Every structure is written in C-alpha cells, then in structure tokens.
Length: 376
Image 1 (spheres, one colour):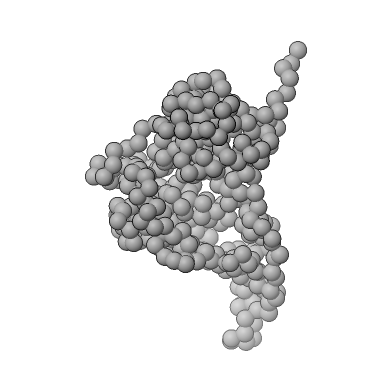
Image 2 (image 1 turned 90 degrees about the vertical axis):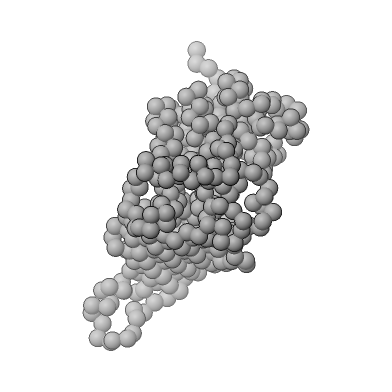
C-alpha cells in the first residue's frame, strides 16, 4: 500500500534576519498554502515568537537533523550558504537558497556537486525578479526571435542606494570576510542573474570597481563593466549603492529594433526591416529603417518572493519546473567574481572564470579583512 500523498512541505528557515523574518511572516500569513513553517534556527532565535507551533533550534546542524522539516530555506550570511546548503542536501532536504548561492565560483561548484550527488532533491535560488512580467516579456521577445540578433546591451542600475546606517547594521556586512563583496554580491545578483538569463553569459569582461567610494567600507560600492558576447555583441553594466535617486534603465539594441525598460514602462521600437539588411540595401545615406513603437501594458511586478516560494513547493510536490534552478545560480556568482577579478588584475577576464584563481585572490582579501569569516 502506497503512502498517502503529501499536500504540504514542512519548511525550515535558517537565519532570521530581515529577509528570513520576512519569509517567515509570508508563510505564516498563509500566502504559500503548500508550505508550512515548522522550524527555524538563528543565534537569536529565542526571540522568535510569531507562532508558538514553530520549533526553534540553536543552529543549522540541529535544524537539519531534527526530523521536523522536508526542505530548508537558507537566509544566512553569504559564506554559510555553501556549507549549510551542502549539509542540507547531504541529509536529504530540498533546498532553497537566498542570493547569492555562494560567495565565489569555487564554493558554488561545491554546492552544485552536492546537488548532483542527490539529484532527487529540489534545489532553487531566490531570484524573485524572474517572476516579474516586465522581464518575462523581454525574455519572451528574445527567445521567440522577435528582436533578432542582439547587438548591444546597456544596463544602468544605480537605484540600489544604501546609507551608512545600512552598512553598520551588521558586523558581517561590507567586508571581504563577512560578505565576500559589496553591491555585486548583495544587491546586484538579481540584475546579474537577469543579465545572463536574458542574454546568456558574456565571453569576456573588463570591469572597473571602486571600493568604499561612497561609504566607509572595504568592498565595492561602485561598478562599471564592459562585456563582449560570443556573437560580437557588447554590453555595459553599471551599478552602485551610492547614488540617489538613481536609475534602473535597460536598453537593448537588436537587429529588429530597440527595447527600453525604465520607470515601469517597457517599449519596443520595431524596425520594419532588420537594420543590417537596411544598411546594405538602402539608397539613402542617412535615413534609418522605418519603425513603429509598441508599448506593453504591464500592470504589476508579479508574485516576486511568494512566486518563488510557491514554485519551490510545487516542484517538490508535483515535480513542476523551477523558475530559478539552483544550478543557474552559479552564473551570477561568476559574473560578480569576474568583475572583481578584472579590477584586481587590471585585465580583461575571459569566461569561464578560473574559480581556483579567484578563490586565492579572495582569500588574500579575507586575510586582511576587518572581520573573521562567519561560521554557521
């Protein structure tokens, strides 16, 4: 006789900081009906009082071995994402990790290896912006060939403004040993993930990172990166936590037109003829291809974190496809690492990145950091 079907996943949360507590409140509010929060852990978990039925454990090892959970959501400082994630997978738990999945590519490779050794488990990453209908529409325009071949990508994301109070709120923040990086490892992983999700991984990167440019921190808070893709297309990626009000503007130049996404407006200026063909055949020296403008009426930014949580439950219970598979989380980590490594070496970095070389570079920074690495 087969066991009865499971209708809910017993979820544990490791880490009850700002985001961990937000996820806990979401689940306890009933917004994820197929997830039930049964246990948590945090160094200060004794203060957790949202639901007396939720069991409290002092650390991740105890939580993982408690028998109280089927899956684990990791919302701890960055370095421990790898160690806690591996421990969860090796003990038979499904895994959802907040971004980034690891601080550096070599650690991400270790985490992915643990999942490959346990392929029956679901492993996802909290890239909630993949649920945003604006980015989903851009993804659709690219994948269906509506844009034609991409020629250039410019993305300016300078609305990640953070104050001195933000950086002083936790001793692990904004240090090489505690966080492993700055804006590229904390805020911009969402954008780096979307960058590769939309356009694929670049072939090479030359980046210019500035460290403590706007804040009294040792990691990067200002980044300008130039990229080249396999087809010859180029890209510029700019981000910072030091500008206000800042901008979030994505511009795509492609054979069949131009896409601009900014201020909740997504427009596609569509060429009637591909620009390369028009350039070769036009008798005019100045006239561009005739075009028309399409504006997409998108009303919201989608389900965001709730969407990822519900999809994770559906993947566990129904084998639904993951919106953000954990295996894809290594790509944003690699992009962040490559931008930093390019700055450290003063060179263009070809991808794939040498993960061991970057790990050695990072260790040198950790050795001189203000903070001892966080242990789970």
